[in-house]
Length: 280
Image (cartoon, rainbow, N blue to C red):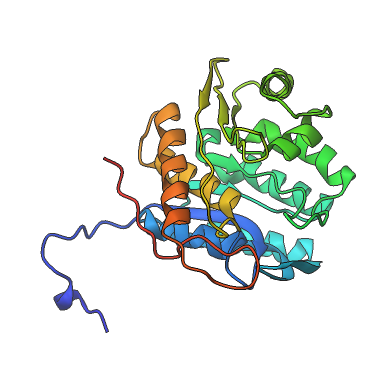
């Protein structure tokens, strides 16, 4: 048991920043809210969560998805904000068009600056299961995107949102520009794991662009990398990193957590759950 008297001298006693994740629940803890909470803890943040959907899944894939009722989601968000002052928000899997509407309404009155809101647009599971309907995608584009400052799609999600094929570096840049044209103030990081060279693309809100070189890591620990990246990015932004620095540090965190992972499960395993990253 930790008591006040047992806390070593020199440790900070100020309350840590409070970060909310709005996402689905993965019982294998490789992705979703449990993965987000681990990343927040690794960056010394206090994470709270609102569950959008329950899933039956493991490292071998998603078997079933059961959305949480919109009223339950709405009450969870209201309950948390009645009690806590949020410093930042990460939005992941929403599951239904109705959930997109509830979360959009919440973000609009949350008081959290858009620059501290990151959306990881989870549209489909890595095993191919649809996780948001076409109606939900359209509501996300129309209602949710104008309220956020950052989005971290992979190339497949970017293609769905921009409504065009994305299979090359040139197409990534074109699709990103198409989205940015309708969402001024949006910083976009496209994770390139599906490209031949796994480079990530960053288009800043001011229109500047940069590619971040990547490399293939030989590991089965790839479950939840998108969740981890978006959560680490939010953590670095909250720490005060400049946009490009935040992207670079989030990439380094995910790479380190993948390399430090141990084999768990029979399929695509999770990142190292206790990996702690201290940027130099």
